[in-house]
Length: 440
Image 1: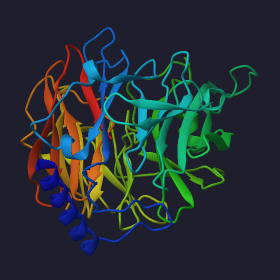
Image 2: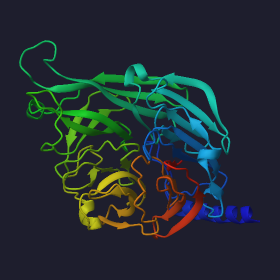
Image 3: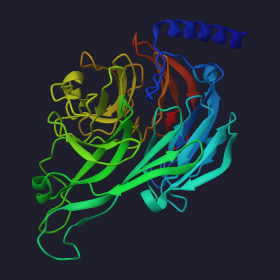
Image 4: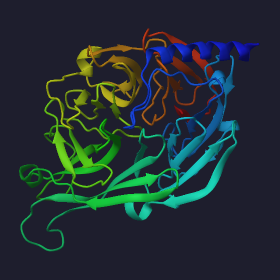
């Protein structure tokens, strides 16, 4: 009876959503306002501690259950006792197919680092690794950053920068710049093969490079609405040109992204925001999202003025007239966006910390009105540290998030982006030093 009730409720929601929403375009924009089917597999991921509580270096565990069960507060999930491990030396970089039936993983570091694999989701701890793998380590290293494009599960993009050095490190002569070799690689997720890759040095301005600035990391690739450009986030670094050592404190440049042609992956171009000076590469999850207005919204980190959400328009340039300071919106200082997810119609949710604390909070953000409101229903717990968080699940106007303080039990939370309503889903059973890092 209960299952029939949930199915009826979801079917009514689906019918309503189709009446109110538009369908996916051919250019890779994901559909919105479509609730997930009650029977869809939903995978929950947890990170085991290595040497220190919350470091996530002990590996990743996954467990799958139905959408109906994941939102049911009477259900209980123990991924660390009942789940199955994912091949990865540290926290795995997981992605999921749109229908929830396939998990994708690139092992992060270790002897299998850089190995892409695909798993059929069968429910519970039953994830069947398909007999198809490919290693991208020789191109993008053993710890590549990657993301799945919203193109019908066709493509994954892995990025990396390696071997940063001064131009005169071996040849002598006058110093001009520090650069590394950037790799942008396209994975065919259907055939499980490398479909294309390009390697190049990405240049900053002569003045910036002469001062020792360089791109240290690439991450968070996203496809624009036209489907002809990839926007890739950056993490910046500065070297002392006299000593060759990295500087801990420096006058930061404006936030920079790299734009490359798609699908050729050629012609890298750096664009710069004058609104923010933070990085935009994220950490364990994407921070760049395409919205219905054709713009890409990007969250920053390590910004001396607190994190911002920036806007990159459909012409693939920053809109420096769009100023959304999260410090101002939340009324605190030193906001650091750890992760976030756009839902639809200008609404998203951020995971953030602020000040000198490691405690994580969740806030609903309105990109159109530039407002932010903390989600009070998620426990205010000093040991809630979601720095490694990577998996949100969007179902129509709802966002699902897994929230567990380190070493403590928690819950799935269902956040309604329209109304702001918050409801508890399944209980998440934890173990000392561990935490949950996503729902897919």
